[in-house]
Amino acid sequence: MPTESARDWGVRWRLFVSEAVGTAALVLGGLSIVIVMSGAGSPMPGIVPNERLRTALTAFLFGCVGAGIALSRVGRESGAHINPAVTMGFWLWRKLDARVAVGYVVAQMLGAGVGALPLLAWGAMGRSVVFGATIPGVGYSTAAVVMGEAVTTFGLVTTLSICLVFRRLRPYTPFAIAVLYAVMVPLESHISGTSTNPARTFGPALISGRWDGWWIYWVGPMVGMLAAVLVCSRLAKRIEVAKLYHFESDRRRLFHRMAGTR
Image (cartoon, rainbow, N blue to C red):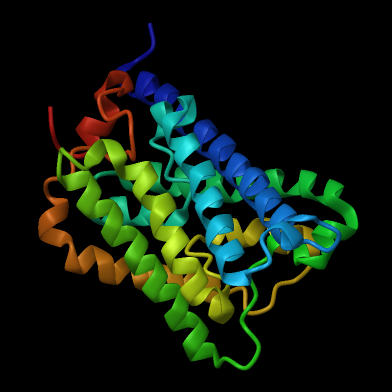
């Protein structure tokens, strides 16, 4: 008979696979939307000529891809963090143990790389927007770009913590993130591209070869996440599990045990 620890690790591997699949879906689906909405040869710039409106719509649809992943079986299994900054936030709030957090981040990066490869099929349309890569804006200092990523990631993690703490808001968490991106991206994307997610940046950088200031998309989100963790530390004590949806679905109650509940 398998031991208690072996059964736990069997569950953990399911979580890691789900995170990889979810992040691959985010990169493939979300960045395909970016390419269709802004790529050379696409009809969308003609249909929605206002660039700011088109950017907001793109960001909302990108967020809807993430929401769909959270609502899916992937979200049921792993919680659909699909973002190293979110995972590290849950770890610092003591909702995940260190080994699971590391496994999630590795899975997210692998998933981002796999999910980016099919984007090459977009050809010239994809290349015209660097397959959705996040690149520092022209004329902005490195400090400004880092700050842009820090501020937007702060907004992301803070919004997550508020939604997850209050029971009436909790069911709407995935949709709140889609609305948040629709607001943030038009305001900030000209500075850093509004990644807020190192895995989302890694995928298109891998296939395009554009690694411009890639370290920024680790440092900025992690600084923003740390600030949000500190500001929301009291609130976060009331977060039950490290999930964005399907809060009661928990194989072997692993999430609840990691969060210190029984």
